[in-house]
Amino acid sequence: MVDSRQQPCLALTTGEPAGIGPELVLKLTQDIDALPGRIVAVGDPQLLTQRARALDIPIELDVLAMNESPRAARPGVLSVWPVPLRVSSRPGVLDPANADYVLNTLDVAIAACDQGSAQAMVTSPLHKGAIIEGGHPGFTGHTEYLRDACGVDEVVMMLATQSALHGRVAGQPYCPLRVALATTHLPLRQVAQAITQPGLERVLRILARDLKRHFGIACPRIAVCGLNPHAGEGGHLGDEEITTLIPVLERLRGEGMQLIGPLPADTLFTPRHLDQVDAVLAMYHDQGLAVLKYAGFGLGANITLGLPLIRTSVDHGTALDLAGKGVADPGSLRVALQVAADMARAANQGLP
Ligand SMILES: NC(=O)C1=CN([C@@H]2O[C@H](COP(=O)(O)OP(=O)(O)OC[C@H]3O[C@@H](n4cnc5c(N)ncnc54)[C@H](O)[C@@H]3O)[C@@H](O)[C@H]2O)C=CC1
Ligand SMILES: NCC(=O)COP(=O)(O)O
Image (cartoon, rainbow, N blue to C red; front, side, top):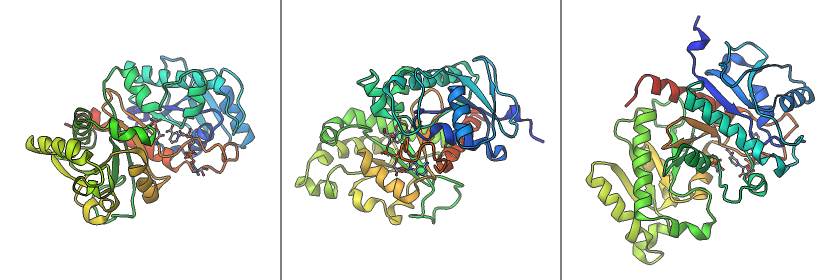
């Protein structure tokens, strides 16, 4: 029998308390054999107890001190690093007064990774609007919060899922479709200006490096979307491909990086192209994520590249419309945990 202490410890934040995060975390504990590591939930124990009672989920909480590691997984037992709510929370009803609670759960998970008591952090969804309204006007998501907390200049958001769009790629147990973003949570009107040669170069370098470092892909092949319709139509439908994208791709190809594009985004996501690459770089959020979620919503994970720690998350949001009903699908959270555990094991084995 495998000693469960050999398994990576995953710090799992419970997310926005009014959303589906807490109940998804509770649901996981009902099938411990499906867990890829030792899980410690980071959140309010009372909140978890209340949600478990309301949904009739049998659960015993093992509340740990911050420096305590979780014991071997036991059926129906959930280890918790406790963080107190600021105000009580009802499913589906946001209260920005809990913004600092949500951010505190992230801080605890980050500290656990820094100190080595967790090997990765996995985040349940938070509500960006509630964090902003709770006194953090510049907040744009976990990705940038982690960037700043870890003191790095640039990170890259990449989502990966199982896809029926190009199922002919063999040899990957999960996430054959990987989509990274050149820009993340920006109003559309700011996107073009945000894509600069130095920024795009940094994103591509991080993407290529972390596909090697975390996923063992020796020489990653990356397809890059154009920004404009038909990749600018030779400059007639926008010139960012000519002024920004093509010079960066040519420079990096000169260093040996395997880059395709910029290709028109409307036909890039077809098997002919996808079968040739390990990842796609989209220029903005909905250009890439609408396709990814069409291909495999609920089966994907969000991975932050460029961090000194491992962080994955779900492919969905807080789903306030479902919160407290017990019907939300924990599939993506399972994938996020599995990807984090695999990344932690790969790091332990010293993948290049
Ligand atoms: N990792 C994170 O923290 C993420 C946070 N968000 C945040 O979540 C909030 C709500 O975002 P929306 O755009 O409404 O997306 P959403 O993913 O919360 O909801 C979109 C639709 O998918 C459904 N859905 C979501 N998760 C589901 C699940 N596990 N099982 C079954 N159905 C599910 C919802 O009921 C809704 O119909 C926003 O504040 C957004 O910024 C969104 C994505 C990721
Ligand atoms: N669309 C992805 C998303 O909203 C999650 O962002 P983040 O909180 O992981 O930065």
